[in-house]
Image 1 (spheres, helix red, strand yellow):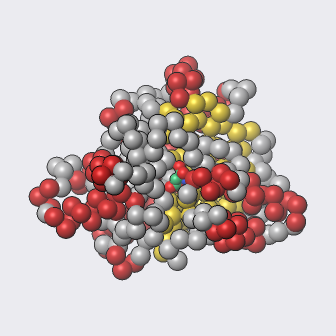
Image 2 (cartoon, protein in one colour; image 1 turned 45 degrees about the horizontal axis):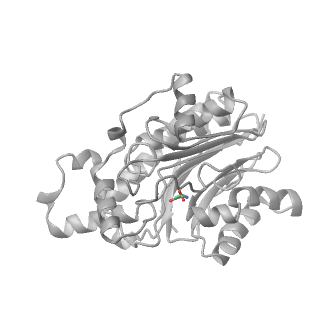
Length: 340
Ligand code: ASP
């Protein structure tokens, strides 16, 4: 038994500047992160597995419209939503993933079912939905994923005729609607609108993730995303790819990433943290920092990751101005942060 059980989460990285963040938005992000941490911490405190803790954390993050996963996911170029998620158990090296799902309420739950009940590791699109249906998982009308804030973000991306990373367009949309008039805000703004965020069209990323080590020293990781705004149909990023957006091995660490997915795929970023620990004896901190601060920047990869090892060490490095993040040790108050 380890006394160092801990869960860490992220809700995306990017240009998040204190000066341009409205105080109420900041408070709302902290409150959401804390609530998720408390729920996942309780799973660990009750003797639950790291796998259950990360599933619970990511499921709650998917249900929160502030983050680009599940409800609140970004729009594709066709005005639809295609969701990706993955999960890995560091105890057994079992993994599950789904990509391009459109009607499964919680993609992370589908990924978890793939891990537990399928001989395969990843299902995509119709096949993933057929599997989820067989498993009796909750389906929703695609409109469930619609939020007005993300819709405005998509419209802006279309006007600019490009794909936007995660919260980018939301920031633009929030800034624009504030500048114009609050009268133009949708009626459901209190529920659906993202808080006013600082904006930088090229430097904000989404995705949610969790890593944990349980009381028994087992680690697990989970990642879920809507991808990037205005992405082409069928585009798949790093989030559902074992080794790129998610990895877990008791012998090394558990990792969940967020950032420019294509670069994280090319760097096999999550696995590289584990590999550096295994092959060159790097500590968790050395390995994670090398990937985020040295290797990814070589190909202009921006973003961050969260990682834990079986001894309860936690790292949350990012090479952007901010990353929505937090961790909670069993028996201690959760810690949340946004900026450097
Ligand atoms: N990595 C995600 C993707 O490329 C996006 C993000 O983390 O913001 O789909």
